[in-house]
Amino acid sequence: MQAYEYQVCSAQYGRVTFVNGGWHGRQPLGEDTSAPLESCPHVRDYPREAGRDGWELVGTTATPQPQPDAVQHTLYLKRPSW
Image 1 (cartoon, rainbow, N blue to C red):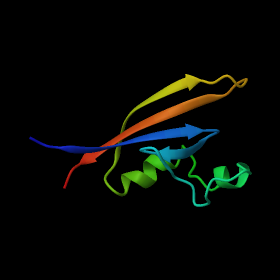
Image 2: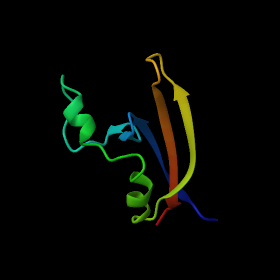
Image 3: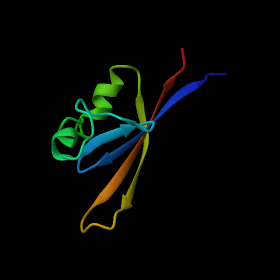
């Protein structure tokens, strides 16, 4: 039976910000959130980049947030365990 690894990715403002609960930006989080947010991969590019490492996008969800027009997306990816 095949076993799998999974990634659960949080995306806000069009950027993948957390993967399996860990910050995914190239810059650390701080008081100024704009630069760290900009250092995160674009949600439209992330599945392609992850796919190079064997990850496959298997599902998404969208959750409305309290801020006007704000939505948090969650991406679910899997790949075979080696």
